Every structure is written in C-alpha cells, then in structure tokens.
Amino acid sequence: MSEVLQLWLIRHGQTEWSASGAHTSYSDVPLTPIGEESAGAIGSWLAGKEFSLTLVSPRRRALETCRIAGYGSTSPVDGDLSEWNYGEYEGLTTNEIRKDNPGWSIWADGPVGGESIEQVQARAIRVIERAVSVGGAVAFFSHAHFLRILAASWLGLPPNAGRLLTLNTGSVSILGFERETRVIQVWNHSFENNDL
Image 1: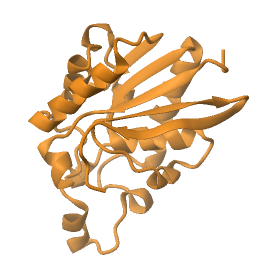
Image 2: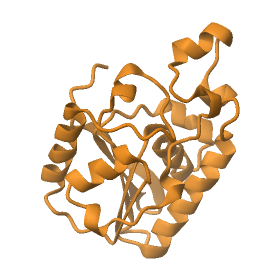
Image 3: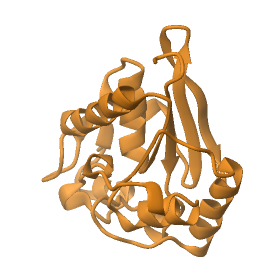
C-alpha cells in the first residue's frame, strides 16, 4: 500500500484575511474573487481526478475551495483538518502581535489561549494515519500552518520544521514515497499570483 499512497494537500484560496497576513483559524471568512478563481483553476488542473478519500476542513474558505474545485459532494468534513487555533491572536498579523511581544514567532512561541504546536501535530498525525489506512491518493482541503505541520510530520521531522515550508493560498502539494522513504513529490504548486 505504501508504494501508491499519496497525500494531496490543497490549501484554500485567498481570503481578505490571508491577503493581509491576519492569522485566521476559526473565523469563517469567505474567499475573495481571486480565491474563487484559484479554486476553479485547481479543479480544472485536477480534471476530476479520483481520490480514494477526500476530506475537508469545516471552515468556510476550505469548504468553498473544495466545492468550487468539484469535490464538495464527495468530501466529508473532518475537524482535524482545521487550522491551528490562534486563540487571542485570531485576526492579528505578525507585526501587530510583535508590537506587544517583540520577536514573537508562531513556530517558537505559539499563540496565547490557542493550541500548542504539539496539539496541532497530534491532529496531523491522526489525519496521516487515516490516509495510510485507506491507501491510494488521498486529498485534504485545509490550511497553511496545519498542512505545513502535517508535511513535517510526514517526513518524520519535528512540527516546527513546518516553518521551512512556505505554502501559498490556492496551492496543491503532494506527499508520497521514493521507495520506502517518505518524501515531498510536489510542493506549493500555486494557482494564484502570489508575491513571493
């Protein structure tokens, strides 16, 4: 089974908050027109690809991306795919947080009143285990920090190694195997014009 297992990580399209850099976990902000367009482009690129399992975060931006891409009717909601709970930092940009907490990093310091990075990793590991139990190509419509931690966990790295893996809105990444070694096969294939 492991030779054919692939995890397709699909980050939702742009929202007003993602465009501004605001931390967005439980707030249900909609896609912008750019986000809707990238979701459609993802759907065109996938061209109806069949997955053995497709799951989606319960957040509106992920649900809309999944629906527009053509997988809304076949994708159960899985709360484990939710974005990192940012607690008191919800809706704030890194620069705003650093006004009161200079040098702050989500990867090193975490959010006040939200999830620890270990709690997010535990959810990511459950999602990976679910994919392994099904096999084949499995798709997850989810969020940047969560998917970066999932990728680090897939590779056997600590969860804060996700800081090394930038992930644009409206992007597709693929995790799989080279022989028996877990690898990144495609990373951050973007369908939006993101300024790097």
